[in-house]
Length: 89
Image 1 (cartoon, rainbow, N blue to C red):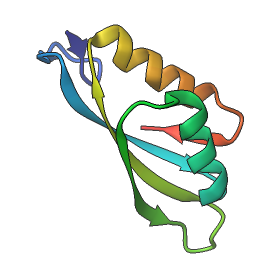
Image 2 (image 1 turned 120 degrees about the vertical axis):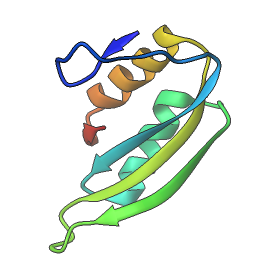
Image 3 (image 1 turned 45 degrees about the horizontal axis):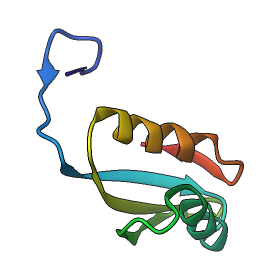
């Protein structure tokens, strides 16, 4: 279970399930390589989401099957720690 917005509401997820991470980086090529570095050969979908007006940032949606909460949080943390990724939502 996970606490949402520091409230008492909890989300119960049934695993395995599909999960979508929004990944933000400075450039699309670096973002794609960073995702590949983290997830290796796991099946996934990576789709363009948005680009900032100035072109400074690009965001993409990473859809992937997560097997349990540890897997989900591991991927989030690994993406967040990658040097080419600015933010993960």
